[in-house]
Length: 175
Image (cartoon, rainbow, N blue to C red; front, side):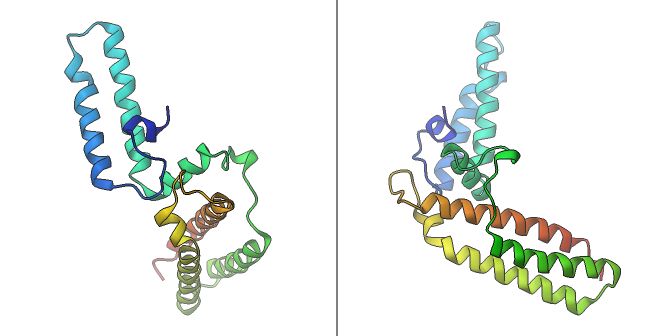
């Protein structure tokens, strides 16, 4: 059973957050182990499993990035690290330039270079977001068009790479 099926929701990237929260609390009340303390061991174990599944489902579906990752996994577009799709070469070339600047900053701290590379990453992220904004807002399993998921997969992989760049940038916060 998928997280979407568990909550009776359509497989979509743009969920009603309020509805999701209400369904989570409803399932939490229904299956919380403390509610079933007098039940037999099998019932207690089953409710503990459901409560755990409910927590995982909510954590995943309430976070847009994790939701996208989950949908891509459900659709067979993200596997384990060994089976990951390739990031486009042109994007990797841009990232190589940014990584070179970050390496230079480690040896020669420079506030102006740091500001410039941070601004470049901001622009890259904004451009990526703008390219898939429509798919992020309106994609669902029912409205899926050929190429939509591949575009979202490409977006996800690039955003994940940019997150690593951001983590490296945070090391220079004291400049």
